Image 1: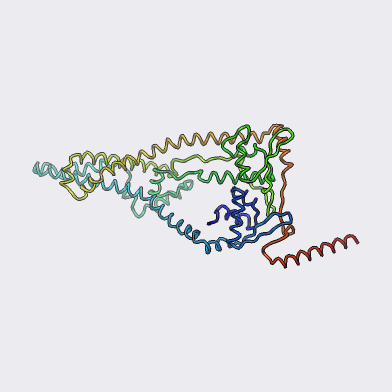
Image 2: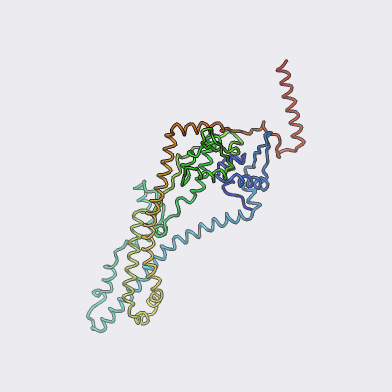
Amino acid sequence: MTPNPQLLQSVEQLNYRVTVGDVAAQAGIELNLAQQGLLALATDAGGHLQVAESGDVVYLFPKNFRSILRNKYWQMRWQQWWGKVWRILFYIIRISFGVVLIASIALMLAAIAIIVISVNSSRDEDNRGGGSFGGGSGFVFLPRFWFGPDLFWFFSPNYSSRRRQRRRISPGNNNQMNFFEAIFSFLFGDGNPNEDLEAQRWQTIGGVIRNNKGAVVGEQIAPYVDGTDEYEDYMLPVLSRFNGYPEVSPQGEIIYYFPELQVMASQRQKRSSVSYLQEQLWRFSQASSNQIMLSVGLGALNLVLALVLGSLLRDGTIAAQLGGLVAFVGSIYGILLVYGVAFLTIPLIRYFWIQRRNQKIAARNQLREQRAIALNNADTALQQKIVYASQFAQQKVIGDRDLAYTTETDLLDQNIENADKIDREWQQRLQSDS
C-alpha cells in the first residue's frame, strides 16, 4: 500500500522523530490511521521504534526515507512519472480551447471570403465588368466586418517582448497567464480555491488542541466547523478522529481532552493558527481584464461569423458547387455553431453560479467569525469552563532519557547500557548521601 502523502510530509516537517499524536495533530488525520501509517512506514523505510518507560512510542525515521520508498514501491515511481506527464497533457488541453477558437475563426473567415469572392465573380461575369474586386463587396466586407484585435500583431515574433515590456511598466500585474491559458480560464475558471479545505480544517483543529495542551472546550473548536448546536454534536467527529474523551464539570459543562495528542517526541513551539476557518471566495477567472475582454470579443466574433456563414450556406448548393474548404466548413457547420454559442454561454452560466456560491461561502465565514469573536469576548461561564478544561491539560515530552527500549540497537547492548546507567545513578546517590 502506498503511504499517505500527508503522513510523509508531516514526518519531514517534524524532523523525522514523531509520535502518533504529533502526526495526527500536524496532518489532521485520524489517530488510528496515523498509527497504522507510521507502523507501515517504519517497516518499509527502515524506521525505528523508541519505547518510553511510560509505554509511549516514538517513531524515528531516516532522512532519506522517500528515496527508500521510491526504490521499493513502483506505485510511487509511477505516480511521479504520471504527475509529470499529466502536467504536460493538462497544459495541452488548456491551450487547445484557444487554438480551436482561433482555428474556428480562421476557417469561417476563409470560407466566407471564398463564398463572397465567388458570388462577386459570378456577378462580374453576368454584368460584363460591372464591378471589380477592388470596388466590389468581397474585399470591402471583410475589413469592415473585423472588429477584433490585430491577431497578426498577436502572433508576431515581437509580441512576447512587448508583453514583458508592459509587465515591467506595470509591476503590480503578476499575471503570468498566456493568451491560450486565459481562454481556458475564461471558459472554465481556475479550479476550486477550497480544494484542500477539509485537510486545512483538521490540521487547524489539531493545532488548536495541541496549543491548549490536549484539553479544549467546544467553543474553542466551533470557529472551525460549519455548523454548531447546543448539544455540541459537532464535537463527535473531532473526538472520533483524535481519540478524545468528554468530561463533565461540576457545573454540568462538557469539556474534551485528548490524551494521545498530549504526547510529543520533542518540545515544540505553539503552532500559529487563524482565529476562524475562512473559505476562499471563488473567482471568475485569474486572467487579466484585458485578456477577459479579448476572450469576450473573440467569442462574439466567432458567434457572429457562424451566423453570417449560416446565412451564406442556407442554400445548400453553394458548398457543393465550391467544394474544397467551403464544403469542409459546411460539413462541420453545426459543430462550429454549437461551439460559438457554448463559448459565451458557459462563462455566463458559471458567472451567476459563482455569485450564488460566494454568497453561501460569505455567510459561513461570517458565522465562524462571530463564534471566534464570542470566544475572544468570553463571558464568566465560558471562562470558568475553559479553566476547568485546563485541569486536564498537560504535555508529555519523550526524550532519550525516558526510553526503555529502542530498535536502533541490539537488545543485549541496551540491557548492558541500562544496567550501567542504573549503577551510575546509585553511585551518584551514594556520593550525595555521604
